[in-house]
Length: 449
Ligand SMILES: Cc1cc2nc3c(=O)[nH]c(=O)nc-3n(C[C@H](O)[C@H](O)[C@H](O)COP(=O)(O)OP(=O)(O)OC[C@H]3O[C@@H](n4cnc5c(N)ncnc54)[C@H](O)[C@@H]3O)c2cc1C
Image 1 (tube, rainbow, N blue to C red):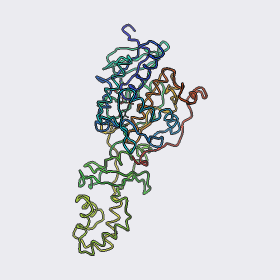
Image 2 (image 1 turned 90 degrees about the horizontal axis):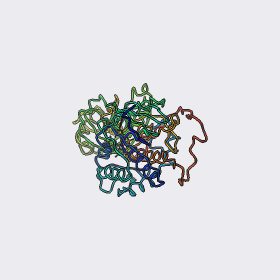
Image 3 (image 1 turned 180 degrees about the vertical axis):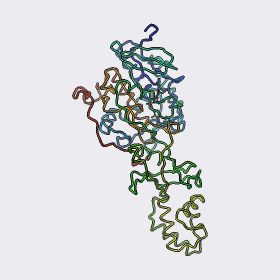
Image 4 (image 1 turned 120 degrees about the horizontal axis):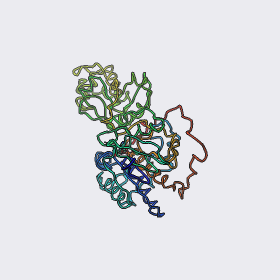
């Protein structure tokens, strides 16, 4: 117990959620003249490491069109309540008030005006310093316990830290090289929180189809659908990327949200179909092909006028029509069917190293939707990817991380409902965790970015 560091508030995890919460909390405390030590601890050498990798280094900060339908969660209503307290405009104002000029694209995606993720991390770190938040780098929490009316957090190197309030913003398991290795989830579980099984989200699919090898490196504008026993589960349109191991690109990243929400037993026998001409019907394509046949084109020649040559070959192979075959009406119909539904058996997705987000996590039913305080452990707050919410591509996940971080910052300051025009915290109306919902929501894979 000697050598134990003390803080009024410990923010565990210096990602988007932890930094936003720390700035918000410190500024409120400074404003009302409440002295105290706020520590932002992270296992990495400095906070904000993952932010630097986001949006291909450009950091897609948020999205004006964000809505609950864009998230995969077991608690859709609770997520909607939380999002209601994290409106897009408030987040944009937060960035701009902290020296970060933002650019809004016509499709609603928000980026830093610099289109450089480093600008975001640095603006946040400047604001942390200005607000008096202390950074504690290389502190890898391995134990979180209730102690002396607050919490005691122990690090891997044996250091111990006592704090009155703790925010668990340690992320999930996605991209562990950038800091979040799942240890935050274990810390939440150690205090009794329910963890929905976690899965890699916003990632590519793997397939054993020999077509993948043939198509390696090809990209095509297409509609991608996931099927189970011939029934469409979800679909998305955009640029599909064929890789040696399977199928990638934004449409498949989005579909990984629907896939991850399936119970493991239902993930068997899933197939993906790629419609290479989403804007044309099979009849239209067959008629076009037949016309090329009547002009004297072979099947291969007609297809090469429509597609990348690798795709042309794959379509011919799938339809069972040799390249040099005469293109009569029957052959044209078979090729059109393949163009509208190139099929790939799905064996799974890539893993934690190659995904962007964690599906599943701490049940949203166990946090107060206004303050983000745990309903099981007063004084403990949760924010960001550690929670059971995985969003679409396009800024949904940073919106969630920043938004829940800001809510937690206000919640820890006890200022959550002031001036927000929001209902009083639900904990005043209902005691204990709410009953679990049975039907999972799958927002992903349907909403176009
Ligand atoms: C390559 C990539 C690109 C992405 N691009 C985008 C994008 O453009 N737009 C978008 O909206 N989303 C994007 N995302 C997702 C988004 O970055 C995350 O959802 C978001 O950053 C999560 O924020 P967080 O603060 O909850 O968690 P994290 O950013 O994961 O932060 C958690 C922090 O906690 C620390 N930590 C973990 N365990 C411990 C421990 N035991 N002790 C101490 N510290 C600990 C970690 O080191 C880390 O710094 C991307 C993700 C990746 C991987």
